[in-house]
Length: 511
Image: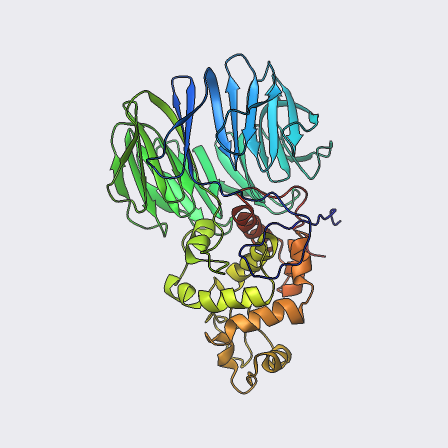
């Protein structure tokens, strides 16, 4: 049964491009990278370069979080304060006392008063809605809310703040995470994961798991014996062993950071990439985008760029905790909608990166001409291309010998499509089918398929109906691939929409 759709668009990515008007989604406001540090119980935040000035935020802080342009603090007296915009002093009191935990994410504020969960959706002063579950722990992600009840049942719902919970597992769940359309959870020490709709099948990932993490299409699992394993792609077997003797780890994009005791190591790129020792004596760390931060003997050290030496001392003493927040990235300026940095930030390692980079100029031109220019459209288009071709203009179906096999950014297949696309690009693809995977024609063919052959694709993306986009693309029905494409859509949408998913429901189900 299909779920209700929403219509939402965000800012035009660059001036001079035609964008069909529609209601705006939550958008970036020129915010720069942020760093938050806790000194004892006093929170400081800086924005911009590593050498920017710290701005004192609040004292008596028990817990803090950054998300988008929002900052939230839970004070020792149980009050929850949130502000948005710049780093000025304009706090809004969401709850004056009794708050025991909170999370801010994607325009929502969730908090508990003991076992009672409350959620505010939208404005800081929006309605506080009680959630009908007896809560042990909770998470919010996009339009999803997940709770682990006091009897260890995992429930998740999506859409509005009504009571429609789906039971994911009743089998003694001990922990869980939400990431776009993925749900991962442990039953004792067994790690399970599912992707797509809430009633999707859960797949056993690994046993003897101490800690796990999700980032993009990657899953990391730290076992009780200290072995750190990570895999990317679908939920099937295929772990890479990263290191042994690991005590903690984090994933972000194509980077993995992990502690061996108090020594921090990090790697980036493919899962079998070399790890580089970052620092020793580390008590806390974070990595986001191209930045790495560590707390060492009260010092806060931060670096940006590659993983080579080059620390900047951001705080000389008294640091006890740190969080990094990357500013939203929106192409490379000058009319560029998507850059190689954008793709790697969203999806991590890219196969044949030189081919991907070579095709980006033609791809950006085709996207601009096809009005694939707002976050929802860009996200749907990129999610499609990632699964069709891996962003490679010269991609072709493996093991096929027929003349009109799948080729190009969007795998053009069959004589009828080759013939129809020929007239659009002005080249006889029936006589020269390999040209469909050429730098000259591949992006234009993708634009033709998106805007002419399946002319409602932009509208489907505007309505966040990735299931309908998938139906238009026309690959064989596969619930798992539907889930992967929807997860890729959500990851790109969050990235291009100011670090948050728009309000409402994302439809992943093909009609």
